[in-house]
Length: 88
Image (cartoon, rainbow, N blue to C red; front, top):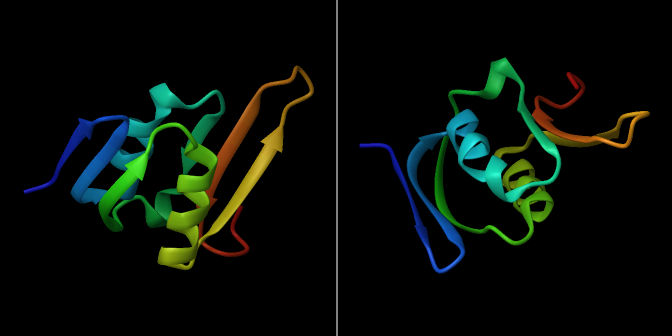
């Protein structure tokens, strides 16, 4: 059963889809989090700190062998995307 809990500033994910993990992390991030559709259904479990979302995405990228890319928009907004290597 997939679920997410927040405990002492941590996201605890149990068999969650990657896109759902990003959705759960979004309130803790100043950047817009984007999950490539090709990897959205990948299953994720673990405990992740909410105080450094970019570090969490880079850790997930390493763990799942995915690419993480940061894009700064001309108006100053940031987008943090995760997806297949070469697809972002």
